[in-house]
Picture 1 (cartoon, rainbow, N blue to C red):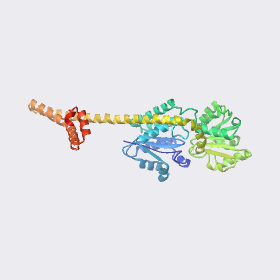
Picture 2 (picture 1 turned 30 degrees about the vertical axis):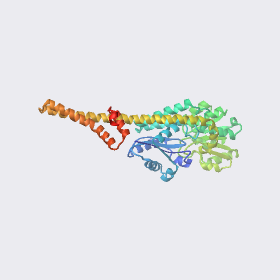
Picture 3 (picture 1 turned 90 degrees about the vertical axis):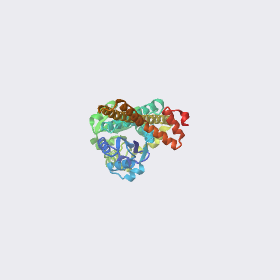
Picture 4 (picture 1 turned 60 degrees about the vertical axis):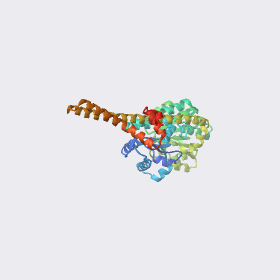
Length: 421
């Protein structure tokens, strides 16, 4: 079997391409079903987040090119463009990659914890779709254990940072007195919850939450003492806020250039700071053309993220050592499983040969043949059957003057080593 990891992320592809190949919850189910129908693919898991789309498969042969064509066709993008921005890992490199991703070593924000939960969800989605069997169950369960160990044995999670934290840090750099500012949070998912927590830690009190589902917004707002609104209220309320941070699962922008332009007029051109953490984007890129609107996407957060990552570099080096050891551990399990399968196959073949010869002997006895002759023939044929393969291996090694193999076979077969040297 061949293990392959195909993906694009914030390091290899621009946000414009990443948002094209991002999976929604509905399209993810369809994609897993589509993969199941591809010839030669036995298991698959799809990870799709703001910063990455990755497809992990266990296949009968190397199907990397087939996967690129499939992903491009599924999302209607050019296969050559996708290939130019993608990475492909195979076998042990793929195992190491998924462990690095789950441990937060490949994230935009080094060591961020959300990715582990996202991979667990991706694994559960694949399992419920019938795309996980023995190998992937072991691989991903092992990966989750490795990520947990990395967090407990290193400082990779110290001084917590994330894309959400970076967004708040950037706002803090732009506005000297952040607690005095009014903030609108668009969305009510995990990322926005993290943003809200960091804002509260910074002393921000004037908060509002806008979401497609009012009930979900009320749940989040209740913990913040925040105002609640629906997305349909954005055009008439946007001007009230100095800071807008958005992260939803919408497939189309929620905040357009015209909406922001009208808000700025009502604000009498007081500036607005906007952060779009969504992929696909929630805020039209053209908003940046407005003089008093300052729009940042996840790609724009790199600088502040790098500043917050300095303290984690040593921890990352320690984490890499743990991962390298655990890749070897998984490969050893994989090899032992192959050995168990070989032993079973060898024993099954021996038992089949025994059964065939015993049935032949019993038939001969029923036909009235002499019992001693039957037993002698049975012993002779059974011995020849069981010794055929080892004898051929010894002859081949001897013919090729392969002393190492000859000695190894002698030891395994419990023969006199001196006689074979």
